Image (tube, rainbow, N blue to C red):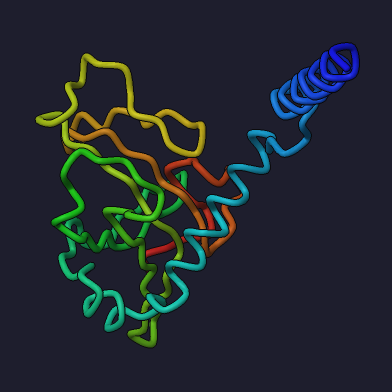
Length: 173
């Protein structure tokens, strides 16, 4: 009788240990690659901006302050207008809270949402500190504006790269 109890106890302990080891295994394929995480985050930003494609909709949702007018570089391309949601300029970095929506003007007077920008002022995150990161990309210094910045071309493809500042396919004309 004691032998049977011990055998049952040993069997239960071993099976419990196997369950524990299998649940802690490094062989779990549930983890996403960095590339897949970036894609998922970009898809989430695109879903967020689905209803923000017009200036009117963006303004109603809080992106109502044009910080820059239309920004364009003579050789590298443009960025468009930078419409900010001021309460998001608080130092937090969250892909679902872009501080800026980028709009390209068109000759007929309409504007097209082309991307988003994330910014952190140097007053909140020192210029001498390591840069904030989002989408596994470090923000860059913008000394003129005294901010850390990361442009993300979510709506209009950028031949220079999704996270490159200037988009040669964006114009202020």
